[in-house]
Amino acid sequence: MVVAVRGFISFYDFFNDIFLDLKKQEVRQTTINNYLSVVKNLKELKYKNILFIREKHIVEELSHYSNAHKHSVLKTLSVIFDVAKKKKYRFTNPCKTIKVHRYNKAQINIFSKHQIKNILTAAKENKNLYLCILLAAYGGLRRGEIAGLKLSDIDFKDCTISITKQIVQSKGGSYISELKTRNSARKIKISDFVLKEIKKYGGNEFVISGKKYDYVSPNWITNSFHNILKELNIENLRFHDLRVTHATFLIANGVDIKTVSKRLGHANTSVTLEIYTSYLQSTDTKCVKILDNLMVK
Image 1 (cartoon, rainbow, N blue to C red):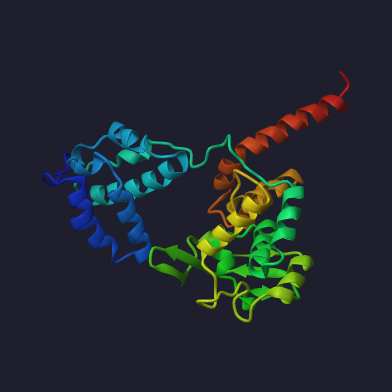
Image 2: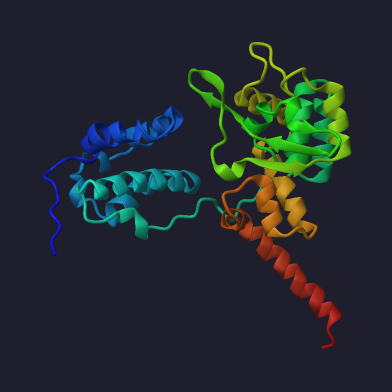
């Protein structure tokens, strides 16, 4: 049976006139803003007839982006084409057969123990930044999760932190928001040392207290941390790499992927595996060397 498909409409017109009207009733404004940002930066694709867009056109469009950005662009395009298919502007979703790696597996950048020690020492004069670094390195929290953490989220007796919200950075400033995904909400164990430092230096409501608001912005964390790295002559590393270092140290010391994934708030273990594949391969090589030394040849 042949299914009728509607007449000519460009990708951009479908997105602007049909897709957005539908999605505004279903998703948050931050998600709408993300859709708008992706489509705004598309090259040739947005002017093509949506019915005649093929896999090769999308692959060509994705070639303009980094690996990490390719994944987010493809994900957004797939959502749009799903709606186009449902509304009978297309027969298929051409994104479904395209695979891109979200992360460059060759690049897992981590801090050494020595670097973390030096960073904490240098940051101690700035109590807010000092606590941010502790929470990223010892807890694996994202910068928005750190900014949104309240004292009421911490169980000092049970040594746990509940991650329930985040501070989102936008062009107009920063604001409190729900977490990005359901799996981002989690409760993790944290060390006595970190809890003692929070008791000593934390704010009255938010753990990291700001000047303009009760909380700090994610950009403040990034910029303040960058200044510390510059002062210590540490290059090619970011605040987010504290979280990567946290996970890598856990894996290196035998913690299973499922536990690490839950602790990081990943959507599933496949996300964790994709990020840390290169590191896991290097540890697997070490296993072979250990076994060679153990086994009788």
